Amino acid sequence: MSDVPKRPQFRNIHVTQIVGYRLPLAGVISILHRVSGAFLFLMLPFLLYLLEQSLLSESSFGYLQGIVSAWYIKLVILALSWSYLHHFCAGIRHLVMDMHIGIEKDSARHSAVIVLSASLTLTALVALKLFGVF
Image (tube, rainbow, N blue to C red; front, side, top):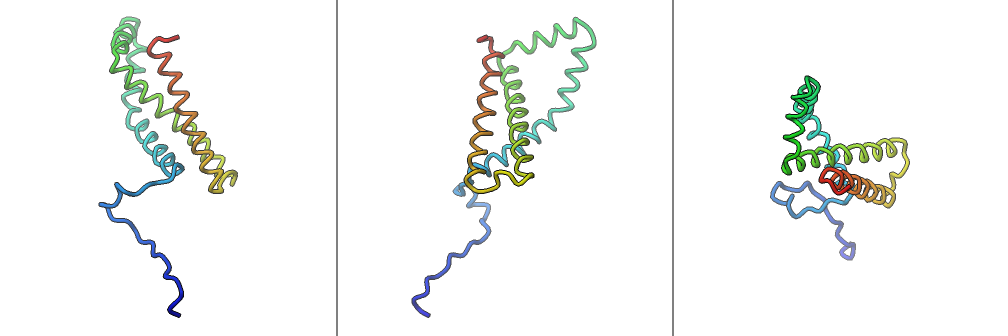
């Protein structure tokens, strides 16, 4: 009995240990999916208000167009674009996993890499267009 190796005990982590805890990439993508969804949900009333104001008249559209030309507003638009694109790509990943496709550890990690690279690539294209490169 004495030569039996002791089994590791896994316990819940404490709040102070969260900083040192390293999530796998699939976990990070899942959390980012939730964060991007919450960000889009919270910004929805503001975006609908801007849409309403832009459709009122040509002068209000021109006024909002002038506001959007500021670089810091473009960064907010870029954050919204990333949020939408990441949420869309991760949502497709979750729908595919709901059909029991790619739920193994290696394929889940691979799909997480695909989601992250696709959302960042599409966001880079939006940034290039937004800042006038093409």
